[in-house]
Image 1 (cartoon, rainbow, N blue to C red):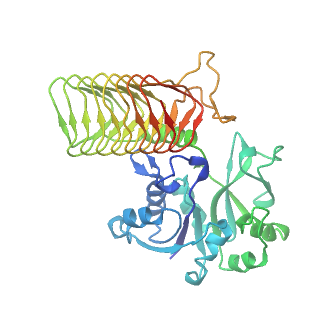
Image 2: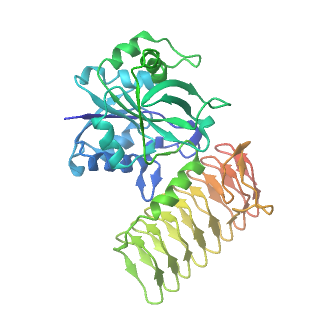
Image 3: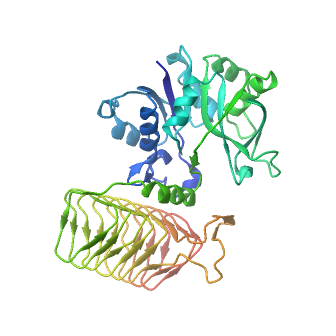
Length: 400
């Protein structure tokens, strides 16, 4: 029986402010934490025994997944007390591993068929994927099925193959990790240990059919868009007369869709929400539990987390909004440049032509606020009435 180790200890600093109160692996995709989607694929591949390495925000992971019995599996947890790299995280499970095992980064989405194929691959094997922007990842070169090189984030990548963060290892990987020294950033890097395998021509590569990594909020939204296309309708709430629903829509228990509202799937609405009256919810939108989308508000292709309110006359497009936020009446979030060029955030190209804002938890807006494209607003900010907001706004900022 193959044991699957999942690394889920990191904060995900590039996901800030969304990771201010939750670990990266618990960010929602199509209504469920990204880690749940990964676990589901691994379960479909036939794996029943898991060890999850937790650290930052570990309580939320433990509470959500428990011992795994609800999913028909066994989960054990190991804590990485300090985030000192992927190699250090893997070393925490060494006392529990006595046979070949699967290792997965917790912040990606895979298909069950690829995981199943990795289980039968010779150890050590690394999963590789063809990327359109390999310079953002660890670049892999191969001869046949043997990996001949691995270079982190090269400005001039030697191939379009990247390290996908899925591995099949023998327990001897722990001996390799004991031989390496901390990297310049003070971390024990798993990739440094892999170089010892590469030098002797012993690291195999397996091409994946599908892979999705979420390094930044715009990556999260892109993967979310694709996953939403696969949902199946499930209405458990109350729909008043005069509501129009088209396409696949999931509505949680206790949710009320008020008269005049118009919903076009794929849409996910959590439990105990109030939608409308006369709300317009457009495709790709996932709304968490306990939310209120009010009169004449329009939401398009966005992730809205638990207990956030968009009461009335507001527009949210292609955005990610944290939990416990409130948009004052008439608040608008722009999502498209006049010149139709891709949107940059902090000097980074999102590669998206449409992208609104990333808003942290507990952000309160006054009435008639305007938020420009590519804006990032930190946690616990207070935005006064009629404010125009753009750029990167730090946590706890007050804008009057």
